[in-house]
Image (cartoon, rainbow, N blue to C red):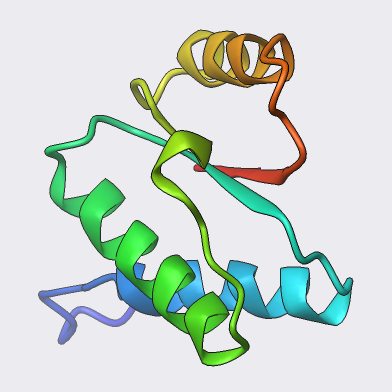
Length: 96
């Protein structure tokens, strides 16, 4: 490892946009978001990038298709299963 590197940053906004790019390539039109804690910086930035990139293609992620939990595997699975049990679940889901 290079000892001159003393800081690494993550571009969560870009990460969300990259996931949106995949959904666009797969031609998903009805998209849901399953994120971490609603007030967590990572969740906010990833969601912002994801939703913004989809909006550029006129794909809207409605509020009822946004679920928030925690960053644990259990929490993500729980939110995904909770979402799948809804009657209005017409959306492809993204979790992070």
